[in-house]
Length: 315
Image (cartoon, rainbow, N blue to C red; front, top):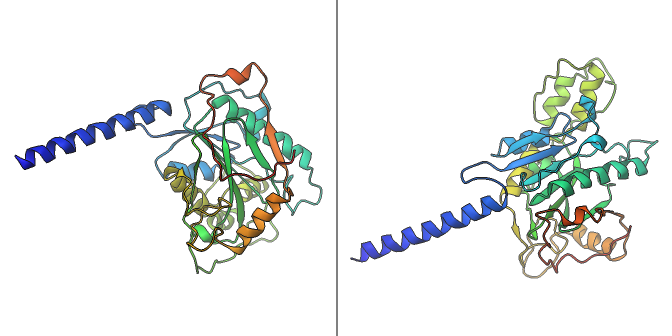
């Protein structure tokens, strides 16, 4: 008799769990058992999208100048079809290596990226770029900014990428970082190879994925490989997005995705400095404001309150 009661209770809990999963899938625009659908903007070689594909996501690649398809001519009205949007806008206009950079052009492309995200209205979005990229703000989303390096995620380089993760549900990501791993520094150059031994295949291997790209010129291969996200970072971000959840008391106050101890609110000394810069309003913020007609798009809900995210915004 006791076994029957336990079995009945377990069956009821399993049914409730299946119903909750069905409701979550329906809200994300997918049927039960279907892999999450993700849109990739500015894909290029799309190592970021390939990392998500390796972790169970279905990735649809959007426009890219590599295919003579500018994002300015692209409109996406697939509201509720994509669970998430991943994007890697061009970083040349923010890069320290570019002596003739034009941040205004970078801001324009970033706003185009935010426009496409607004039109899709996904549950979450993820944008990767270099450290000089401004913060982004989009109505209905709370945005978490964190930085990761390739060697922290198990890669070969010390390459630093800044990630901005926006969520309608107030969730954050926590990439798993390795400690005490000595990276093998391999430079991945963009542009013309510097020596005869500087082959695209060697640079692609340093990125963690042996891309061939035989139909492109040698210079084009170098640019595509150099602009790509290291595969180790891409896979780490995909796993973190899968395990995303709400903010807890153990999370660092700067929302870097690290866990703090009971005696401190900051995981690292750099976290304390980051919060100080936010209080002094040092960083810039790009805000996309939708036209009044678009502000009533279906699926545009108010984001969940997130009291732990409170720093100055500069437009």
